[in-house]
Length: 138
Image (tube, rainbow, N blue to C red; front, side, top):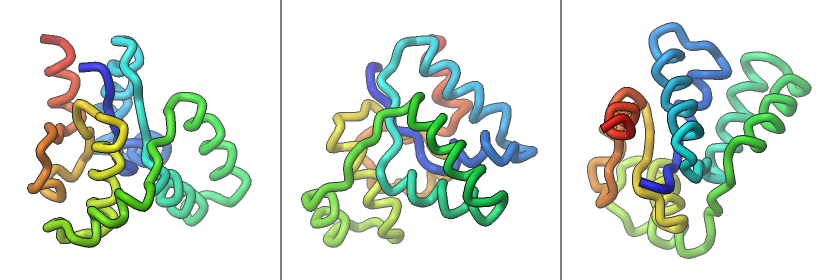
């Protein structure tokens, strides 16, 4: 495994210190970095993260967090091809389709998310943060 795309919810778990998911999400990102993996967030995730952080904190805090986050992750583009594929996909949620095709575009080996059920149609592995850590530690 060389490349991984993290879903927005994993990053929000960390920054919002969500009680039930913080530890696993933080450990998953730390494990990816420790193993030298190329880590991505999609451009869509950046928008989602900003929107939710700004609602939960304030604009200045949200921007500071995004600046730090961007230092840890490369941004996977959401280009016209990803949009076109998402439009005709079997994904129930358009945003999840955009995440998925963004991952495909950067040749991600997997997607790490807290919502695996949203990616039923994925041809690449979709892992919960805990599963991702287990796979890396094999």
